[in-house]
Structures are given as C-alpha cells and as structure tokens.
Image 1 (cartoon, rainbow, N blue to C red):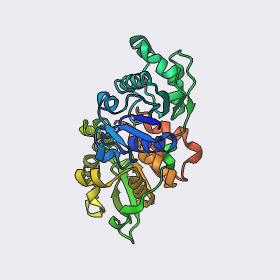
Image 2 (image 1 turned 60 degrees about the vertical axis):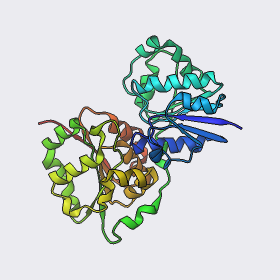
Image 3 (image 1 turned 90 degrees about the vertical axis):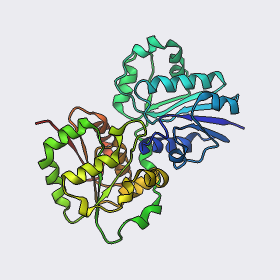
Image 4 (image 1 turned 180 degrees about the vertical axis):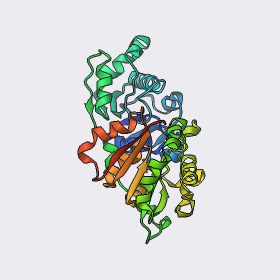
Length: 325
C-alpha cells in the first residue's frame, strides 16, 4: 500500500489553488491519499482524499511511513508559504517520502532563503520531479545558484474538466459575459481611475447578461473576496439589473456548491470574460473563451499567464493594464 501526501495552499478559499490540486492528484495519486487543507468542504470538491489534515502531527499519528509528498501548487511560491511547504516536505522525507514539486509559481523570493534555512535546500535538490508553471518562475529558481533546472509545466490546470451541474442556475436563452474582479485595494485604486476604459469594453456587450465569476473568497484575507469585488464593480458600472446567478456571490452557497470544475463550466458558458484573476483566465484559455486580463500596471501575475500560454490564447484575447491618473 502506497501513501501520498499533497501539500499546498488548499482550503483557504481560492479555487485556482484547488484546480492545481486536482491536476496533481490525477498524476500522483496512490492507494492512500492525504491532503493538507484549511477547509475540507472546499478541498473535497477538487478530489476525494482518504485523510484531510491541518497539521503534521495529525498526519503522522495516522501514517508513520509516507511514500510520496507532492507540493502541488496553490499559493506556495512566496514566503512564508514557500518555507512552510518545504519544511513539511522535509519532515515527510524523514518518514521515507520521495519529493515531487509540481506546477508551482515562484515570486521574487531571492536566494537568501537557502542561507537562512539550509536544511531545506535538499528538499529541492533531491526532488524526483520539479516543475514550475511559467518562464519567470524558472528564471527565479535558476537565479538562486543552487544548480536547479526546473521544467515548465505550462499551467496544466487549464485542462481541468468541466462539471455542468450548475447549468440549471443559468438562463437558457441569454448571452453571458463573465466578470471576475477581486477586492484588492491596489486594483481598485487604478480601476476607479479607468472607468471610461472599462465602460468602453463593457459597451461592446450591452446585450449580454452579467455572470459573476467568483473564484476566491479567502478565509484569511478580505482583499481576496471576489464576491465583494464583483458587487462593487456592478455598482460602479450600474450592472445590477443585468446580473444572473447572484447566488454565486453568497459565501455559504459558494463554499458548498462551487468547485474548480463548476467554475470552468460557468466560464465556458460566456461569450467573453473580463478577469482580474489569473486562474479564471487559465480556465478561459482551456475553454477557448476570449478574455481581457485586467490588472494594475505593475502586477505581473496575469502577464505571466498571457506570455507563457500565448500559443494557446483564444482569438481576440488581450491584456488590459490599468495605469493611475
């Protein structure tokens, strides 16, 4: 009997992270599969696991031997999450596990971490597989001077399957556009400076109903509440009378009913997506739905996706950087 452990930023309310987990699970599942999660209700929609745990003692109390630990993406490419996931993988390694690092994005961490926590270096250098999702992540890892050469995974969660069970919640005869806006003040500072730019985009779809695409309602960060961001956006652009499937903005409904496959289905029903969320853009690419990626001018998260997946972009998709006045 083989036992796999999946680590990442799971169960905090970001369905992009859960899509990464679902992709990794298909590749690396074993006879017994365990996952770290902050909320089992959210993570259980990504895949069915034998153990959902929130700390290492809970895991090792059940299983003294681990065959494989997978850092499976999901909010791990920055500190302290980067350090924490390596540390937990290190302890799994002490229990016999091989290490797989799959499809992670790396921010501008710098090389100092290797000097601060030298015992963690071997988690990476001795990993059986190491992949990052984009070219900039690869360049960051190689800049650490550790001899690491990760392969690029090209956001494999874009191929996540669609779950159509929410079809009954959508009008049959309406054309839809999806709106995905977070509640981050950095975005809203420049969004309010560019109302005319956004209004011109929306005017092209005046015959369409508005579908909220809520991929993140983060349990620890209200700036990452897409339901709040969507409502502010609908108010600002006077869209409320055109909104359908308003239940998607209700946290309890969202938590219990919407997973990554459901989210991709909603996006697949749209004629167009306006998104400040990279994983909704990734789903749009997978579903061949044209999009505009909207972002504050100095944020490289969405441009990374656009550049890395450029050969796969749906026709008429573009970036929409917002600059302060």
